[in-house]
Image (cartoon, rainbow, N blue to C red; front, side, top):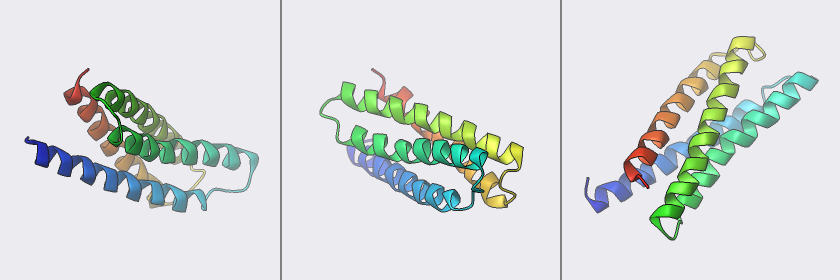
Length: 122
C-alpha cells in the first residue's frame, strides 16, 4: 500500500468510527432508565465514543510512536466496547436487532484497528 492508499484507508476508518459513534449515541437513547441501564449505557457510550476520539488523536500524532500509542488506546476502547455490547445483547436489556448489528460492527472495527496497530508496528 503506497502512502496515498494508506492515507485514504485511514480516512475511511475514521469515517467508519464516526458513523459507529453516532450509532452508539442513538443506541444510548434505548437503554432503560434503571440503575443497571444507566451504568451500562454510560460504559458503552464512553468506550464507544473514545474509540473515535483516540483514533482521531492518533491521526494527529507527531510521530509514528505517538500514532502507535493513541491507536493502541483506540484498540483497547474497541475491545471494551465489544465486551459491553456483548453483555447488552446477552442480557436482553435492549431487545432489538440493532444491538446485534452494533456488536458485529464493533467486532469488525476491533479487527481493523488491531490490524492497523500490528502493521504500523513500533
